[in-house]
Image (cartoon, rainbow, N blue to C red; front, side, top):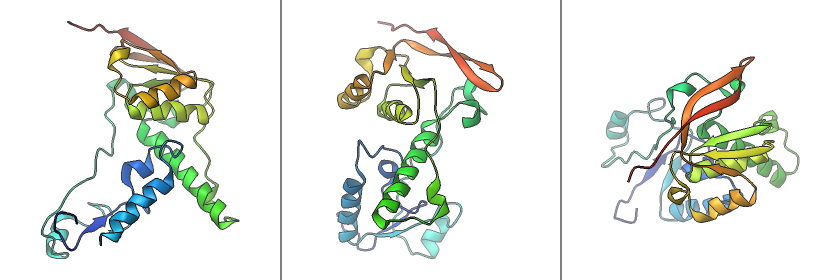
Amino acid sequence: ACIGYQDVTIFEKEDFAGGLNSAEVPQYRLPADVIEFEVKLMQDLGVKIEYNKELGRDFSLEDLRTKHNARAVFLGIGMPQPQLDPIFHDLTAEDGFFTSKDLLPAINKVVKQQSSCGSQGTCSNSSATASLPKLYGKVVVLGAGDTAMDCASSALRCGATSVTIVFRRGTSEIRAVEEEVELVRHERCEFIPYCTPKQLVRRDGRIVAIEFYKTEKED
């Protein structure tokens, strides 16, 4: 809208706007009202939003050209599926395994429902009774970016007794912003650098341990 397009429409597959910030970033780090403010600024410029519209399910790129007379199309769908190491293929939450795409949206969904019920008084919608993902015992988070830090701090809020952040590079190469790292350090998360996953140890269908290769940094 700011560069001259007069008719801009966002097709959003969820029933809320904000994308990754709204769906995955924990609200204690990025409050919902901040996201709502930015969405409102966008709408004040004339941008329209159509909710529950998913590319490939509800419309195609050809539909945008023929039915909506779109002069330009921007695909901002990100990476909806995580990249997995082969040792994690076919694992689910029942096995004790979560990706960030499983854990963070599930937490934010519950927080949104609780906020909605709180603002409306009594919430009668049965779907709003969803609970946070259940974690317990020791949790290992792989990676040292912003998303990994969000998962680490969220794991503690979901019941984990301790969280260890394991990553293949050194501590000086942590990609997360300093404020995020300091937050999880303050919450007593442990950092183990120079490690990459080797194999899982499972018992009775659940993950009980993980073995790592030790990595080195080449000069």
